[in-house]
Length: 341
Image 1 (cartoon, rainbow, N blue to C red):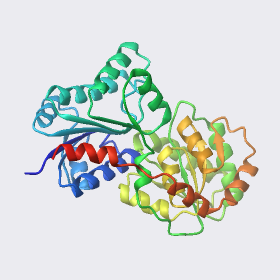
Image 2: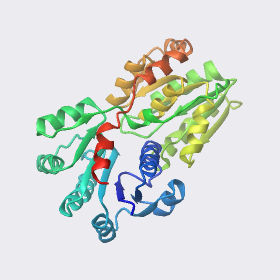
Image 3: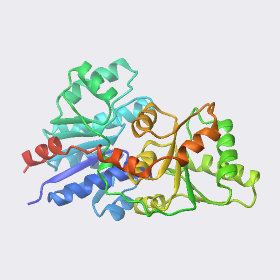
Image 4: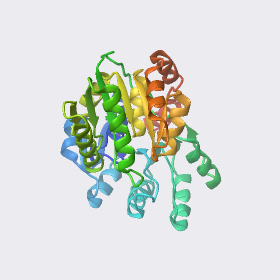
């Protein structure tokens, strides 16, 4: 009889990065012969897209029941255990993990970003719960150091999306722009970016990517309006509400990418697409520095002419070579799965 795995994370919300991580996890578990149940805010969509069983994340009675009837819980990836988004979100994900531990199930924390957790009691409880998990892996040094401080043993891994097999179609004439709303988002940045794109790429197709419509779509529409006001003849299109497969397919057709979200930068770099990163978060800055690609601050203080010249001079093969240095290490994860069989 196949062993059952429950996967908990930020699934069903239409976020590209989280859905890509779910695709990686489900493919891995299917190959290993596990029955999969995903906790999702949109179970029907998750079931249809990933060919797995799925239940509503916030049906607490059903979630506890399915965890009780399973062999292992996987929590991740993404940044689930933090209270910056909301304390309520942190409490929910901790409750899921605690429920699995209470039923004596093995718990894997999968390539998460941990923290920040500003509430001291919540931080204390998080540390205590993570110490009881079977295997903990994190995707960044800050999380690793935080867990060391709490006395939690963990493996430091790269982001799981580096394990995807991604290839560019080497198309010319299409520019990708990926934006998201954020507290530091501002019209000055959008206007300077739009003005430079109109100046350098007025004759190319501009595809504006919304990776999560509830957060990204409004700012994408505003940016499209700016481009059209600056040059009414410019060819623009918003790519949104797309499946994971379609979004990756659209990115593969790009000649250049200007991206804000971390996973948009990862996918473009891995495909060898010449990319500018927009520095809204330290993880994006770190990735841009490692991959040696141009970086624009949210304050937009840079010389945009120089930044775009740097973009055009990027060596695509160097990007692919960098991506190959990021090999996701499955060993600890595989060892835990083996123990459940």
